[in-house]
Image 1 (tube, one colour):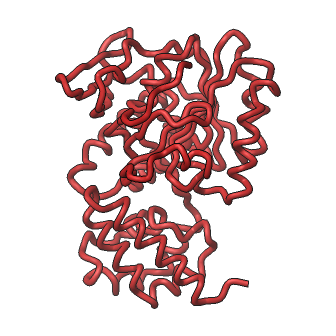
Image 2 (cartoon, one colour; image 1 turned 120 degrees about the vertical axis):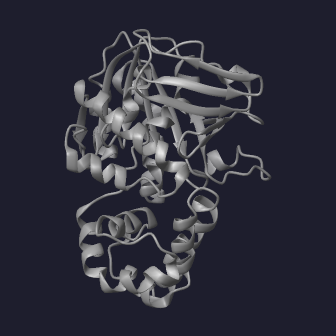
Length: 344
């Protein structure tokens, strides 16, 4: 049985890591709040009373903002948080963290554009499905040799993805041909639901660097609402094979996800990796597995990343379980060095 001290130390470590590794350099306010909570025994005790899945910084901070938390340094907002804790906890219990960042498509497009099409896309942890439309967004890549932009076949999109790449060879030559889209999520979001989209906006971290993310999210939601994909409600471990079997046989099925497996325990992550390894045989078609996840998700992935690699603010991107790149958590960077990209 976990002791109170052990549980508090675990939560403290999560908040300290979130502040110093993930929020640092991108959201000063969240860094300050997270580091402050990591050292605050009273607030840690409040967090300890919540279910483990509801203790995460992203969810607690978004819930606090939903309830009207002022954007003040932790030393000044602390008393407000404690005073309004019942409301914050109620929102956290009712809501989920479903960061749906369409700009991540800028990091999906390099591998997607190299896969023989047409493509059938299946996203696990799809939320509102904003990342199921990489072919509908314009993209602007900043390379070591200048800026390259390309638009969908029918012209410039109201959404422009922006990404810096470390190798001009990473810039796709084209958008992929997508003929089928599905998602799986524990709590699917309707992109036409104003309240649901407002919650997604609320999950965007505060700070001037993130203002463009808010505008991009709202515009992407309008695109998705006009042509909504089917997002199946359920556990990814239980539903991925059934939904994958529905993809058209003539298309290459691409199963992909960002920051999803971190919400599973070690045994569940291993189970998902096993499912993916045998999915092509199970559904009798070609399946490509693309993943953007943090270090520490699967040991065989971590072992492929050189020890001196800086992974702050970055996912490790894999194709079929092989590391091919580091991708920014919000899609702003894509780095293939020192990895060599395998043939698709």
